Amino acid sequence: MAATLVKRAFKYRFYPTEQQVRELLRTFGCVRLVYNSALQAHIDLWRAEERQLDHSATSAMLTGWKRDPKLSFLAEVSSVPLQLTLRHLQTAYTNFFAKRASYPRFKSRKKSRA
Image 1 (spheres, rainbow, N blue to C red):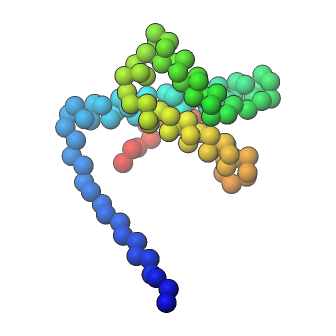
Image 2 (tube, helix red, strand yellow):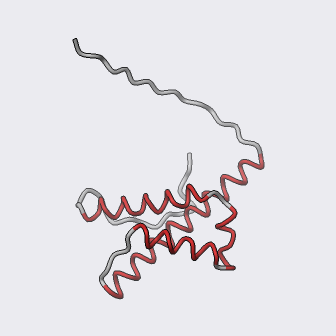
Image 3 (cartoon, rainbow, N blue to C red):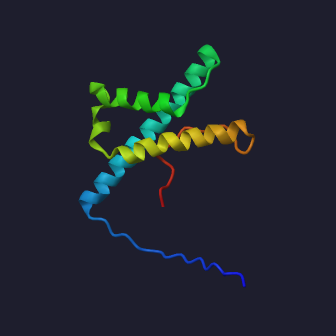
């Protein structure tokens, strides 16, 4: 007799406080900045040397960006979403080169987060 697998989904509503809203917007902004900066680094390296960046190289770049006085605010948000966005960019490149997706695009502030 085969076991049946039941999948369930739950939706939860989130009512953030003003402080949580500010922190979320700040985190989203930092994630967008890191993604766009890493994408630009990918593009620049490809145009200059026709070479690709791997995740460890972009992760090292993130560490450097956090140490830069102009980008020191990146160190003030959680590192988990910043590292995850680098993984997402790497997956986007993998899918592009496997012809499963189009070329990765820069993230816009105007796009809805709803």
